[in-house]
Image (tube, rainbow, N blue to C red; front, side, top):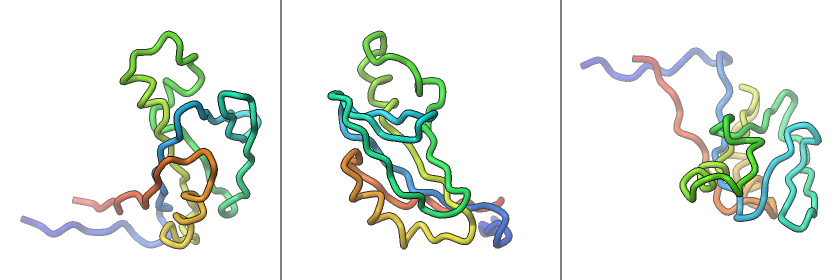
Length: 113
């Protein structure tokens, strides 16, 4: 068996995975989080070219009313993709402090077979 080989440095950035609290969603156009009452939270950028994305993009803009309980739960999972120059370990506490985040952790490091 071959040991895992990490990708070359600078090839990919790492990410922080997190789950939104119930009732929160992310507006990808306005780049703000919105709760059920309409209160908005705009996070400070976590680095040049950082990107906030839904882990299940197909559920991103769907109204929760027509979704099953499992789909509504999947709709809450997101990630911040960071540029290679930023360390997720340094920024995970920042993401955890956002009012819309229930839990957050550094995503596992990928490796090549």
